[in-house]
Image 1 (spheres, rainbow, N blue to C red):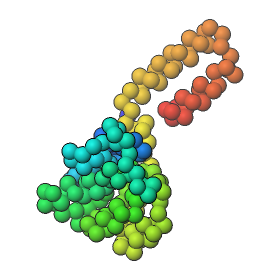
Image 2 (image 1 turned 90 degrees about the horizontal axis):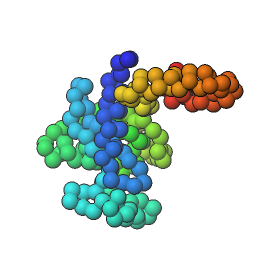
Image 3 (image 1 turned 90 degrees about the vertical axis):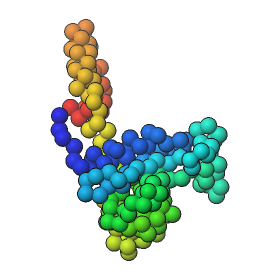
Length: 187
């Protein structure tokens, strides 16, 4: 098994945090890191003790859910709550941040913003990050890197393909499955 990079590790942490999201529109996770040490994490969901979108639906105003706090803000506020400076730290987030989160990221002193997926990338947010000297780095997330069952899945696939060939399946019949497995597992 190939060892993942630090950037992949912290991005995987953000994706893990996103699994705690209570937003029905988009699950986002964020991890704040300094010197390869995790300082805080957050996901998008309701404020502490508040109603969750998964339970009560989104509360949308001007095409934006106002019930939730965004993952980036959640992580930044965890640090603020406990008196931890994020000046010079890195932020790993599953999706490119919205404009209000971008402003908070800049104002808090984050030095580098790593994101996995584009999401409504606001041109003004990009401009502000550039002006503030925040380095923006795209780190694509490869779920295969953290699939702990991939070896078992590939072995099962190989066994099934062998049995299908023994039963007389043609190359043409098997080709779409082989292509899908190559796409999923990189084999």
